[in-house]
Structures are given as structure tokens and as C-alpha cells.
Image (cartoon, rainbow, N blue to C red; front, side, top):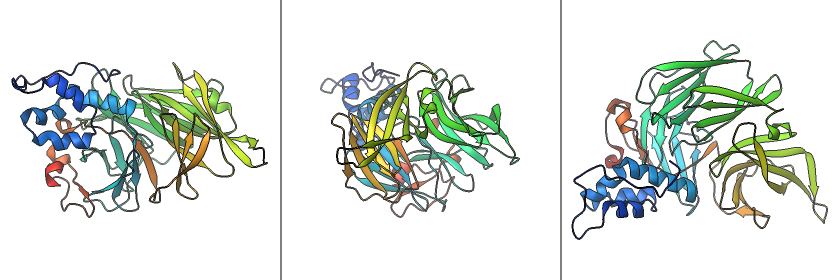
Length: 388
């Protein structure tokens, strides 16, 4: 859905509103502008307000507005089974604990509609909505998994999980797909000899990586609708021709690539050295790119782009674990004062009310607690909201 102002349909004929109440569509349109956590608290007002966050049209409209206008959350994985959520608008921190699992979870590099796949060293994997704290175990695992990505098929309106595994520990990688709600993994392709993948950025139904094979770089993509794997080498993907470190990111609903140039040094009038970071944005296809921004950053430091929003870029310095803003309009660079936990992995994540309850059984439910966590194990079938 591309238009956050589209008509929100009332699918429950009992929720028409009384003579003195606000019409359903008007109320729903107002609520799309509120944070998801506030909406969940307002469910206790009456039956109409309780039904709105469950309405599929409302969930889609709220999600699209959040993608366009709201600043992303930062989702951090810490040493134990704790996931920390940072609101980059208020800079408030909240933590959640995945119960029944003691090990650190690995996070993907991006989210799909506010949902993320979590994996740990035992290859136990699950899908988490950090906003609502709904969490479900992915069936058919463990297996030696190299990559795990979540995507949405816009034609069939279902979520799918992509798994890339190397079960024989050889050079053959098997690509498999699971439709959420099913227990059947389907093989959709194989690749051979990729040394490793960088990225895993999901944008509009497609996930992208930079793949290295025999020292050569290529842009790899998987389309969840077509269930097709594609690639473009450096001769047709212009940003990959540059000599430097690359990072994939999402830029205003399109795929972006940040290139930290190794072959260019910038000098200020007082002879200070700076490094050049270029931000490219993909156009109509995987072979169509344009350079949108050039940033002068302190030299000899690796900066990771966390997100770009409203003409500002939030950067992470992995050496001092600091956060920095770059103002694209005024070309100003400076620190963001914030006590950031030591990052293990970090994912920008949009706020979302998307639920997968109708796709999983209660036995797949994983309890998520806050602070010290809730006591419980997978399969208790407890509603997370009520449990807290």
C-alpha cells in the first residue's frame, strides 16, 4: 500500500458508532497518526476503540504512515537474551527478554513491516514484533543457517521466510522458502562459491545483499513475490565500481548504498583530513543508480549508517560506540549525546501493529518479558499483552 490516507474500511458491521460518537473512518484516520503503544492503551475505552487496532485496513494505513513520517526505532541485541529498543524521537530505552532462551540473539540488518527474524547460536529462530512483543517460533529449524530473511508477498498478501543454508559445509548454498502459516520449506534455488554476504536490506518486497565471490563483488537480490534470485555485477551496478567499503541501507523507500571511499582523501582549509562517504540510491531497476549525497567524515574511523530521515543521517562509530548526526542541508557533523549500550547488532525498525497470530498456533508462541522477564516457556499459549 503506497497511500497512508487511503480509505479505512470498517469490516465489522457492529462498529458503526452511535449518534454521539465519531464515525469509524474519521476516528481510525486520527489514530493512524498516533504511536502504536498509545493506540494499544486506548483499546480499553470501548468496543469500537478495541476493534480498530485489529482492523486490517487500519493496520496497513498506520504502517504506511509510520514508514513515511516516523523516525525508526533502533533494535539492539545485547550479550544475553535481552533485546533493547531505542526510540530515536524521545531517546527512551526499553528492554525485552526472550524467555526460555539464554543466548544472545542475532538481528537482521533491516525489518519487514516492523517484524524481524531472530536467530541464536543454536539456530533457533523466531519472528518478533518489537512494538507489540508478539513472538513466534519458526518451524522446521534448527539447521545450519547462513542467512534468514523475512519478506512480504504483495500479490498473495502473505509473509515468507527465506533461509540460506550450507548443510554439507561445502561450497553449495541452498535457498529455501517458508510461507508463514505453513510448515513446509520449499527449495527455490542454489548458489555456489559465495564467500560471504553483506547487507540483507529489505525494501518493497525484495531483499538485497552485496555478495563476494572469488574477490569480485555483485549485488544479489531475492524477490518474495516472484520467488526469484537475481544478481548484477560491478560492470552494471555503478556504486560497486568504487574503491571502498559498501553498506546497503533503505533511503526513503528505495534501496541505498553507502560507499566509504578508500581512494579519496578530503582536506579542510586547516589541513585536517576527512574521508568521503557517498550515498547512492537505486532507481527503477538493479542497474539504475544515482549519487544523492556526499559526506565529509573524520578520517581513519569506520562509520555505519543507521538511518536517513528528514535530511539527517544517524551514524554509529564502532570504535568509540558513539552516535553522530550529519545534517545534509547544512553539511554539519556532530555527536549525539546518548549512553548507548555496546552494540552487538543493530536494526532500524518501524513501529507496527502487524500481527501473525492467525498464522501460528498457540504452541508456537514465545513469551517476551520486560526487565527481568516473565517466567514461562514456549507453548504456554499466554497472550503477551495480558501477561505483562
